[in-house]
Length: 218
Length: 45
Image (cartoon, rainbow over all chains, first blue to last red; front, top):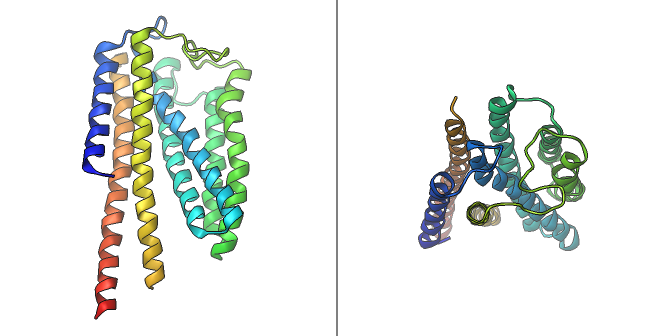
């Protein structure tokens, strides 16, 4: 990715930061905590995007049996796990301030914790199998099944069970009730974070390319 | 703690996490590129 794009993404995110703290109004009932939405929600969103890309490349591997697809699936899942961890950590900081403790086993917390375990198991599986083709095939099948659980844990469980997690903006009807400036800041943040994800993903792809070249030369 | 500081802590955690990860990736890429260049040089000789 060129320096022009990197600088552009960085600048965009700084503008989002300024808009979140100085321009967007606060939601009723959430007060200053409204601003968390612009940073915590995109990390959760990117978790889903990354795991989806991981599942798609796993399907591609199973169809074409090219090791690069498995490497890309692993890269995407790793990025997904990083964003999932960030969403969990930032959520628990908020929980400490709002609910009094870092961890309450609220449905939202429980579901993201299980999701973390599901994807931690993906990496445990990868490190347990040595033979490359077998590792790739097993990991690909696991990744596809793991992704099936993602919508269930991220979107369904927290809405089926009563949760203390604030949901007034993205509500159960699936409608976003946000004031214009808030919605603009929120969408800009989602866009900026998505670009940031592709920056990381491109770096990962470059790393994979170099690893493949190194393997070929060895 | 004031809510605004909690939000700031959360933003900082995210930025440290994301940019720390990006920097570690960058470092790995540089190291592997050097190793590749070395291999190419020894291959040419």
